[in-house]
Length: 322
Image (tube, rainbow, N blue to C red; front, side, top):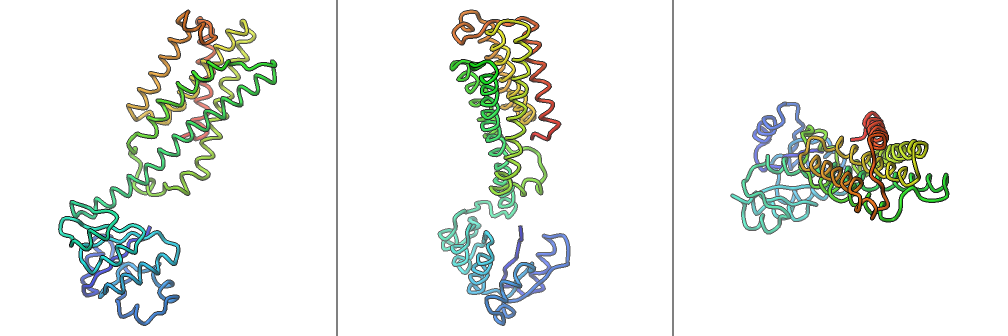
């Protein structure tokens, strides 16, 4: 991200203000007259290294915005005067300082900052970028968990000729792991990541390799945790009991990964614990358990399910699941 100060003031005045904001005096300062001597190619070559453009007219501001956009940059322009309105309108994101801003600037803007604080713009940018992390994590919960469920179901079908879970159990898994937990992850407030980390988030970075890694890790650990529990249960009891143990491990593994991801957020913790409580109630309540094709589990069955889920969750955490 590049921040450039455009001002009609003297270069010394603009440089002093920019130095106070940036915290250093190693700034490249040019003037509107310097820009007049450059053609469009020369201006585009100059702009990436510029910090302050002084003696800047409304026409210069429009030309600067056009040049940055020609370079493929996403341009945000802020101002409060009528002379800023053309550039504000032309920018990808036009921002007006509303308290002391002119009607022309406010009318041209996409966003009006009512408290006239530049810090508010930065805070909004950081929070907006941080939201992409929540989007990535929520997609990881949904896509990774569902791929893990598919892998477990397909593997069980290949081994035994029938799915380890019936249709009602699969619907129960989706209800407990995709509904409240993923919504809590998506809607949580940004965590205490540094400003630099938050600004690195965005559509390209958050929904690229990092998302694919999250999905892969979550899918793999979910499938392994459920498959391990189901396999062990097949050697220690009947098929229906093995399916119930596999169901418990499948849900517990996904909820464990979600709690690792959102452990600092009360709503995520509440959603995860609540879903786990519902799962236990469904399995242990005789009539309800029979409706879902389950059987109440004893200490051994729960021990197999929870130990497999814990091992899979720990593996995901070691692998770097966020």
